[in-house]
Image 1 (cartoon, rainbow, N blue to C red):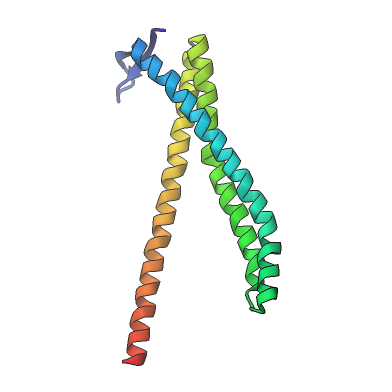
Image 2 (image 1 turned 180 degrees about the vertical axis):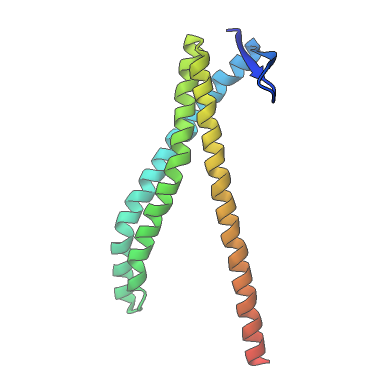
Length: 159
């Protein structure tokens, strides 16, 4: 499959033609298989997280009451937290799955529109993951700041 796509420069004029070589197409076929595999594993993991989240409240509540600890209040939090994380994981996995599905259509039917749609989903996947990583890293920085403040406070209280 020789596929061409016009590339626009910043002024909007067509600057060159992009052609996929047979090797590039072969790499995309192989990539699609791995993408589908990873997406299916992602959906399985999300399903397991939801199941664990639904039962976490019961499990942690029973453990806390058996041990006589006041942690029973946190059992519901753990269940909700796991379901929330599963919801966050759903979107990048969905984008990855859509990328693989549209890539298969594009490669089998030589459809440039489907190829463009596939890459749009890949872009959405990485955009979501990137934003999520920025948020997670921000929480890490905040946690480190709070731990440092708590450590200095504890040192000054004892010293």
